[in-house]
Image (tube, rainbow, N blue to C red; front, side, top):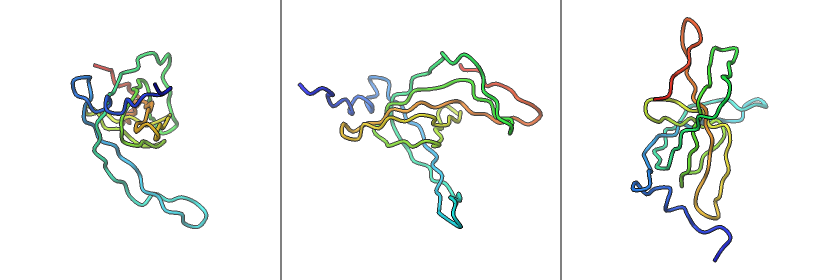
Length: 126
């Protein structure tokens, strides 16, 4: 038996909790010595998404973005840092990725991101 058995089929098995979600990936070009965003693409995906409720504190940015809750994602679709996952009407920013390309799957952690006008507000997890 291999040290890392092929579990990639489990990431798309709806009987085991796999669900559909979308990935927004920004397209970038190299211009004048820096990357410039030139658009974005939406990629449909399937995977197992597990809520991670152990984050101890909120993170606030200068732009008024709050990150409170996180998810773990197991999917056959390759994810990249800074991808955005659209799931259940919420937007999550991918903050960590472990790719297991040899085994056909990817693991990522993503934090809930919401921008609000008129002040910071946290989005509660249902």
